[in-house]
Image: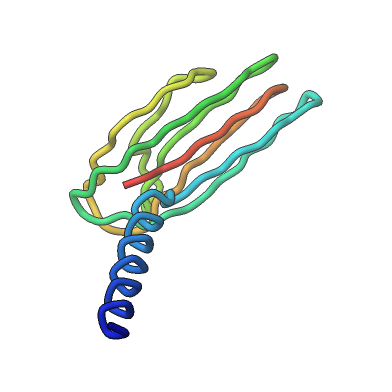
Length: 118
């Protein structure tokens, strides 16, 4: 009886850990800017060769320009997203290594939230 209970608990823990890690983002970044500002933010994640990732970005632009790029470890732009938009894209990474999400804003007031998931 105790062995069955221990096995059941172990199975539940394994399922929960798979569920939690499967839904946690590879990278995420968010910001709320209340006064006009020009700056940049960046976050990094590691990708695998031929891996598909889902990049979701949401923004509420009250003023200014918000630009978003996905850049590989060599500085090449993998994806250049349309400014001041909300969207979700599936992107195929063509090499293993570190990737950067670069957010650049000019004379910007508003907020944004970006996440990358497998």
